[in-house]
Length: 239
Image (cartoon, rainbow, N blue to C red; front, side):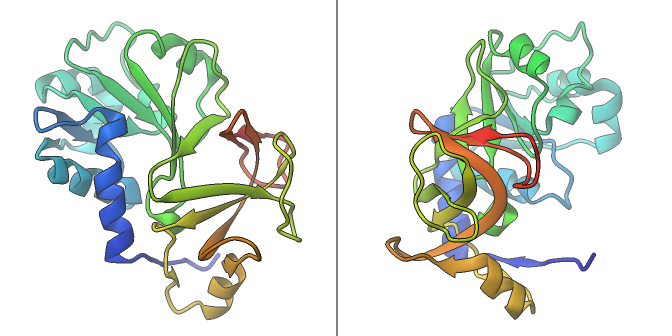
C-alpha cells in the first residue's frame, strides 16, 4: 500500500505529554523504559511525556529486549514500561522485577492468559489508540478476570463515541458500531493526502469539532470502550 504520514499539532502532542503520566503513576522519581521501536509513534510519546514529568528515560538496544528483557529492566532500574503484548511475552519466565511498578500493553490485543498472569502482580494497564489522534486515547487498569477487549475510558482532552457504521448516528450502549475519536488530540490529517484526510477526518452533526473515523468496531459497556480490530472482523473490543 501507499505509506501514510500523519500530521499532528504541537497542541495535540502537548496534551498527550501532560495527560499520560498521572494515570500511569509516573513521577520525577520514575524510570521509564522506551520499549517501542523508533518507527512506532509511542516511542516518541513515551520519551517526551517522561521528560515532561522530570523522570528518567531508559533506552537499550532492541535486540536485548528479545533475549533478556527482564535483565535489561533490572539493569536500568525500570519502574514503568509501555510495550506490545508480543514483546512482553519475551520476558523470561523466572524474571524477578522488584522495581517494576506499572506495565502498559497496547498496539495489539493482549492474550487473555497474559492479562491473568500479570494483573495481580503489578499495575497492569490496557491501552488503545490511533496515530491519527496522537499516540494513545483510552486506558483501563486491568483487574483479574477483565477481558482483553476492555480498553477503558478516554484520557483527558479526548472523546470516544461508537456510531452506526456509514451513517455515523448515535447508538445505544452495548450496540456495536464504528469507534470515532474526537478532542484535542485529533490530528490535522494525512500528509499530502487531501482525499483520504477528507474521508477519515470528519465533522459529525450534533458533535463538536473534528472526529477521526478509526474503522475499528466497538461498543460502550458500562461507560467504557470495548474495541475490536476492524469492523469486518469477528473480534470485538469494549469501551
